[in-house]
Image 1 (spheres, rainbow, N blue to C red):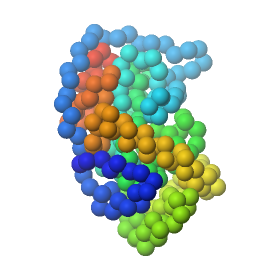
Image 2 (image 1 turned 90 degrees about the vertical axis):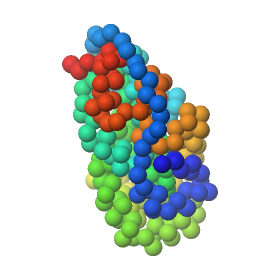
Image 3 (image 1 turned 180 degrees about the vertical axis):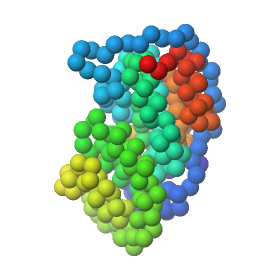
Length: 249
């Protein structure tokens, strides 16, 4: 499915059907081959599993920022395939990250207004929590869709609101305020993030620019050391990591 090139003017116009649509990729797979790479020790007093940095591409990098094997996922928070990948693969990916040989970077490919709202909220707290909150939000995805369907009038009303009120209205209609409050983000903290239109615009702009530059049109899409992959699932992707020299501890 073609990714939604979202802008602030269009940030409420995508129908819910877009969020419910299937997602996938069509990129060609590049075979990466390499010898097994020995584990790389984290600096004293730290471990790679708790190390998070924000990249120049505005992605959140878990693990060794200088890892020789860099896995990137372009993801949407309203993509069922991304939710499945999160549930199936994240535990194993963190085991690879713990070796210092693999880093995992999550970047946004924004598809619709709900996606942009969730993307804003998972970034609202400490950077170390971004991927954790993303995974939990993917687990909540069916309920998000159900909430929006049930509160369709409120969702549509948010579209007519001034831009500084728009995303808070979407979050309320989708049940996101209570969801994130239960995970350590107060309602006031969320409101501050959801009214920060400059930051929200930056998320949308980065998504659109990178999608255009890299010809990424669907989610999830994976890059391994800057090469686009077309895995059939986690098993296929893991095999590619291992061919590149990664091993779990």
